[in-house]
Length: 261
Image 1 (cartoon, rainbow, N blue to C red):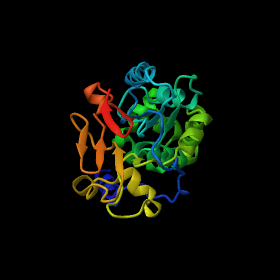
Image 2: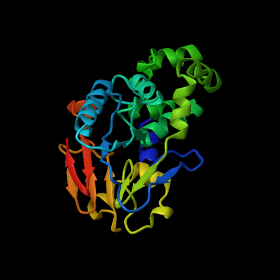
Image 3: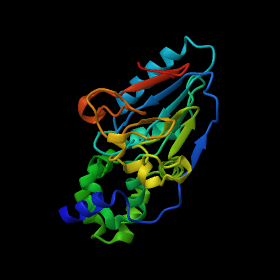
């Protein structure tokens, strides 16, 4: 299993071919409303609700309704992945507009649901906690299915609601707003946005972390945990490891200025 995981991470993403994910742009110039970005959730439902409360409280000072962008990784590692997906699948109230982007963990979960042969790598990737959030442990799943992928897929279809799968399938991978680009992991330096691969947007670390985007854009991202939000050249990192730190970071951008709330 270890060698399989090593091959998986060396390649930088899932091996199964999937259709390209959607990308959105809200154009230039920058918006006349506040933007909020939320770091990696990883099954931390209480922290997500607290982040949304902070956003709603902060947004009251502005005349125009803001937009919240979640940077992905809603599942794995933390205790309540199923609750997080259920929350994101429901319509928001009138005080919160949100766009959830796709993280690598979300994409791998979807790959696993499509192909349970990948169970070993998914469990070591943090999926054990996700499975438990749906009321089933890994040993019971394997035992009940006898290791047969078709039967395992049938069992998963019974415990993972169809609207959770639909949400995972339809998560976009990038949002561009004015001079800001929101993605899960980062971008390949100096490569035009339209030429970026989904795998890079969800998985990249180097050379993005050391070089930045090397484009006239500021990239807001998560994926690589930091002790506190990191403001670097051309990028802002806000994955503060909520599943172990207990803190889910929220970045605010208003009038072109970024701050943490």
